[in-house]
Image (cartoon, rainbow, N blue to C red):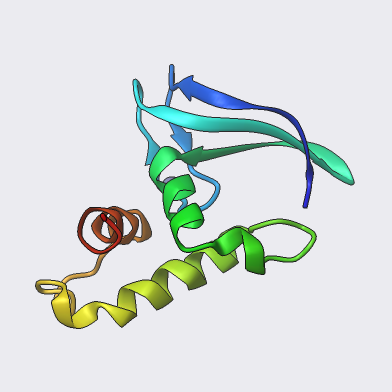
Length: 112
Ligand SMILES: [Zn+2]
């Protein structure tokens, strides 16, 4: 896993893009901001919800040394979503964005 240099929650003063789901983090929204080191130093931003689903689905335990990248995140969410496709209204007709899938799963499937 990458080394964490700094990590914390921030309130978005401008729009950002979530490094996991690739959707917007809106102005005023609380998000996770981290500075990481893996060879190079880089920043990582993600939705609070995306972190939550990564933890709920135990994504971190199955990722390699480079950490949880967007491709793996995508696979995990799509796999979980397809497992519940029968209980998702109009899931077949409607195209859910990755972030919508995350929100749907958190709100309806993983809430316990
Ligand atoms: Zn996200």
